[in-house]
Image (cartoon, rainbow, N blue to C red; front, side, top):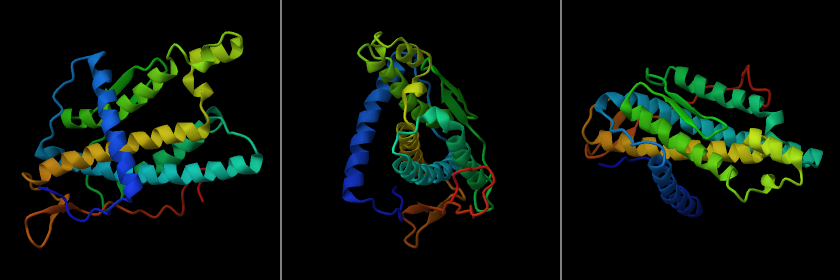
Length: 244
């Protein structure tokens, strides 16, 4: 069973994302093999609403990261210098979180459970999910951040040069101290892009065997599309200091 109605990505974007997906699958496998035995993360019909809400929120997050990346690049050009992420991280997070929350609460969305996770400075992942299915979604997203975190601590990392004790100490304490705002935003955006692909695949698996308000049958009755994601009005944002 396949979805109908998805916009076709450009050839370059499609090839890039396929390559990224295959590469990330290998990274996830490695992350899982050296930490724990992966639990069953199969999705049930009851998970369709949670998956759909998460899918729409991730789409909104990607759009917001794209906007912020362009805005910060323009700021960097004006200043003639790279902006470190630690100086604006909280502002960026408030922008994205506001978009996600607005989409989740929109009247055109479906009532759903929340799930979340995080990767700490020691590359440890925490997951808070209401079901095995949503555990898999968060795990997929956070595995990307975990691999980026572990790559920071590789033995040949530039910051490990003890000729600069301050750089060494800051790199050891917090990897974000070495990240530019742009690099941080690209990492975050990629996590949501991978999540979109994952949740869409899970929804497609459910569409062939589950009845849910998130699936809209086509006229032929033989394929399904997702109901449209909410498109809330964000013109009067209250938390994002870098809003248009």
